[in-house]
Amino acid sequence: MTDASATPTPSEAPAQEPEQDSAEPIERKSFLSWLSVGWIAFAAATGGFFTMMGRFMFPNVLFEPPQSFTIGFPDDFQIGVVDERFKDSRGIWVVRSYDGLYALSTVCTHLGCTPNWLITDNKFKCPCHGSGFRKSGINFEGPAPRPLERYKVTLTEDGQVFVDKSVKFQYEKGQWDLPGAILKV
Amino acid sequence: MLELIKNTIDFLSQPSISLTMILVAFPFVFPPTEKFDVWHRKLKLHKIWTKQGGLIGLVFITLYFFLGFTDEHFSLILKKPDNVPIIFIIYSVLFFLWLSMYQAYENDKRMAAGEPVAEYYPAKEKVLVWPDLVFIEFIALILMTVFLLIWSIALPAPLEQAANPTLSPNPAKAPWYFLGLQEMLVYFDPWIAGVLFPSLMILGLMAIPYFDRNKEGSGYYSFAQRRKSIFIFLYGWLVLWIFPIVVGTFFRGPNWNFFGPFEEWSVAKVVALSNVNLSDYIWVKMLRIGLPSNPLIRESVGIVFILAYFGVIPIVLARGKLRALLEKLGPIRYGLIVFLALAMMLLPIKMYLRWTLNLKYIIAIPEAFFNI
Ligand code: FES
Image 1 (cartoon, protein in one colour):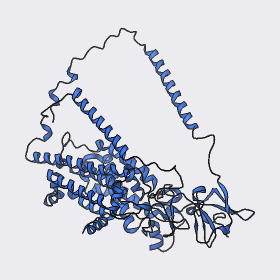
Image 2: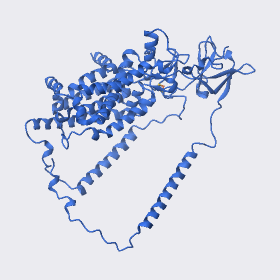
Image 3: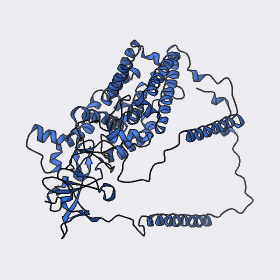
Image 4: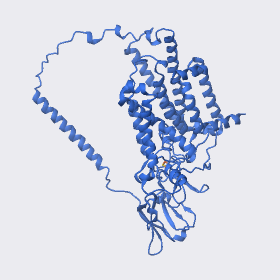
C-alpha cells in the first residue's frame, strides 16, 4: 500500500565479487579446532558460573530460629482463645479448644502469605487473595485449597508445652487424628 | 444526589455486576459478526469511534476521576503513589483504543465507498532518519527522563520497615501490572493462575501469526475486515487483563474484600462466604452419602466436566458452527485456537461459579496440589 517499491532496493545492485582478502585464508581444519576451543572455553566458563551459583544455595551459616521450643504451661492458654504471642517470633498460633491445644502454622496454604486473626469475625483471613480459615484451621472461603497445617505439640517432663515445627500434620491427609496433632489437656 | 450517584457506582462496580455489563456490552461495542454490527449501528455505538465520541468519553472518565478526587474514600486510593500509573493506564489504553478504532472506522468508510484507505497515500512530508528522527527520539528520551525524575521525586517510593515474613500488609497487593494475575489467584490455584495461564497468554500471543492467515487489514487499519480477530484480541486484552488490574487496584481492600470505589476501606467489613468444592455439592449435598475416600472417585464429576469442556466442545463446534473454520485452518490450528479460546472463557466461568454458587474448585485434589 505504500510506495516502498518506488525506492530502489539494495538487492538490485549488481552483486559484488567477494573481496580477496590480503590476509592468509583460514584453513578449514584450524578453523574447526579454534571453534571447538572456543566452545569448550565457553562451556567451562558457564559451567563454573553455574557451579558457583549453585554453591550459594547451601549457605555456610543458617540463621534460622530453632524449629522446636517450649511455649509455656497449658494453663497459660485460655480455652477458646487464639494466642497470637508466638506469631512473630515462632510463626505459630496456639489455640486451645475444649478438645485440647494445637499449634497452627501461620502460612496460608494458597500462596504463603500470613493471614490475620480477625477476632470479631472469628476467623483467620488472608490479605493476599482473601482465603478464610476457621479457628480450627479449616479453610472455608477464598482460594486456599487445604486447611492450615498443624505442628506437633507434646508435653515436656516438667509439664510445659513443647512445639516441634519439623513435624507437620495435614488435615487433607487425615493426619489431624495422629498423636501429637493435638495436645489433650 | 451526589450520594446517590456514588452509591450507584459502588453497586455497579461489584465484579459480578460490572463484568456482566462489560461482557454483555462487548459484542455490541466491538461487533464480531454482521448481525451484531446491525445492532451496533442501530444503537449508535459506532459514534464512540468518532471525534465527538472520543471527546465525550474523555469528559466522562475525567468527571469520574474528578468525583473520585473530591471523595474522601476514593481519593485515598487515587492519590496513592502506587496507583498513579493505573490512572495513566486507563487514559492511555482508552486513548489508543479510540485512536486505532477511529482510524479503522474511517478506513472502513472509505473502503465501503470504494476509495483507497488512508495509508495508501504517501505522506506529504518526508524526513530523514538521520538527523531528524534520531533527534526527535533523543529529545523524547530526555523529556521522558526528566518526567521520570520529577515523578520519582514528587511521589517517592514508600520506605517501610524491614521485611517481616510473618507480617503481610493488609491488603497485600502485587505491583500494579501483576494485579490482574493476583485477581486470577482469587479463583485458581497458584500453579494455574501463576504459571499455566501466563504461559498460555504468552504462547497464545506468540502464535497469532500462525493462527491468523487473513491477509486483509495488513498494513492499514480496518475493523470490518477482521471483526472476529479484533473482537477476540480485545476480549483478552480489555476483559481479561485490564479489567482485573482495575478491579485489583481500585476495588480490592482489606482482607481482599471487594469495596466500591467510594466505599470506606474498613478492616471490619465482613463478607460471609462459604466456598464449597464441586465434590461436596455432589456427594454431600445431592447424594447425601459423604465424600468417597479415593480422590479420583471423589473428583470424578469435576474431572469429567473439565475433560468434556476441553474435549467435547471443540468436536461439537467442529460439526456445527465452526465447520468453516476447521476446513480453512486444518485440524491442528483449529484445535489449538479452540483450546486457547476455551481457556480464555474458563476465567469468567470460574468467576461466575464462585459468585453464584460459592464454588471453590471444580476438581479439588489438595493431596496432590491439583485444583482447578
Ligand atoms: S496467599 Fe493466602 S489467599 Fe492467597
